[in-house]
Length: 215
Ligand code: SAH
Ligand code: MG
Image 1 (cartoon, rainbow, N blue to C red):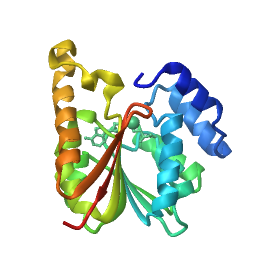
Image 2: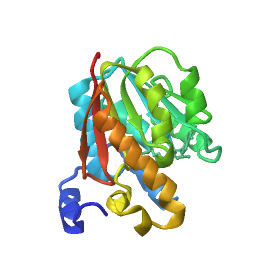
Image 3: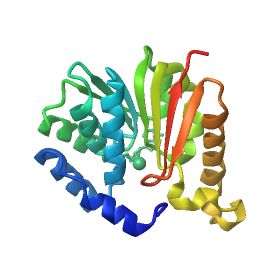
Image 4: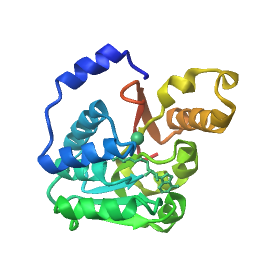
């Protein structure tokens, strides 16, 4: 936990429910141990969407579709979401959830590895939600920058890795070291790239919010 547990509990106590279908899907995800966006991160995502009003959204990491359906509730009416997932077990569930929520017209799921799928995407997106394998974010960045419109917003989830990111490389379990150094590199890039203005927030599992400027 990045933030004091009592503060998180307090913030959660103020949250209000989403519509029934979203509440059901969230519970099903939790029951099946699918790692979906946390409550406090959901609220932040909603606020950013309401401010940005994006018409083209790209999500990297669909899981079973919870965050895509949530975003569809807070985007403009003509908004469209493209979401990428590679895990075969989750794809049929995600499709079924989009159907249950009546969102098949607004949400397009593309199956495959995010790097390959993004490489073939054209056009621009005014909001990108990065929520896939943490160790890959740094590899996705060139495509993300190509696909993000000027003034576009990139929101990256799970960037503080439950606090691990601040530990010395040697304090991190060996199997987590690659992710640890790649996430540090990713955050460094987000903060130093000349086209990105980034704020790193200790919210949920850590969020980075970036805006792309023209040059
Ligand atoms: N955004 C979802 C949660 C996503 S969990 C929500 O909040 O509801 C992260 C997902 O990214 C997992 O389902 C995982 O299978 C997927 N993923 C991981 N690496 C990927 C890759 N290289 N390409 C596509 N999807 C990937
Ligand atoms: Mg996440």
